[in-house]
Image 1 (tube, rainbow, N blue to C red):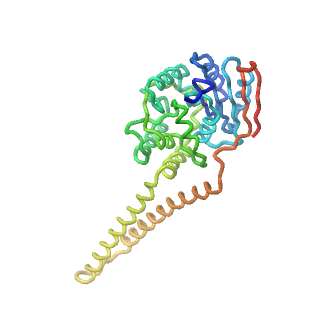
Image 2: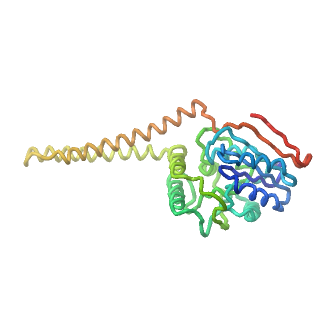
Image 3: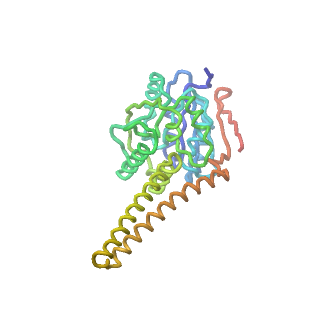
Length: 325
């Protein structure tokens, strides 16, 4: 069995979290984890003062080692998480948001459940979600898409507050493409999955960083990167419309031969617009696949790390080790 420096690593992607990240980190530092734990903060090109706050937290770290990974620009939550996972040294890794909606006190329960269950990943679920209505609808749609396109257990809620084994982290981080979806990578690697119900709190400060644009980008990631079902649907739609067109042609010919000739441009234009729209949709799906293949082939980076700052409290309290990318 591989020896790990800590029992637990906690990965927190930080974006517009200047008002909440310090409180979260201080609460995580007080946790009593047998075997020790570390905190990995990933600054995802945050436009506010998150980077300065994170630097201060690293310099003040006394009991729990903190690693700050500073990305060169904003790459998105899943890209940031992937980078954070690569800097962990724990036997288990918990990922959580920076907004304090997941109480730090639940971290210990989640870790204990993961160790007792022996599963590769344990997802959290909420009795009551404290998100805006549109965000809850978007999450339900994303989970439904995952149900259809991925080998996800029915009813499993894909929460960003999850605990993974080091084995699973190693499998997930092998993916180096520019469009990661952490949950999709997890589903591809394991079926040893469990869940636990935890508390979900209202957002401590500010508003959600998930906009409609980000949710649509997430849906596209699930659709295109982790399934070829859209291509299958395009093929089925093509066959179905071809069959409908053939039936239409036969009916028009029969009507012209034995009855009155068909009249009216409205029906003709409606059929033309329908067929053209479906053709453009299929071409768009193919273009999305081709575009992502092009970017992957040209090695579009998953992230660009500007620097890594570690507070090696185990060696000497307050010591800062800076690794330039």
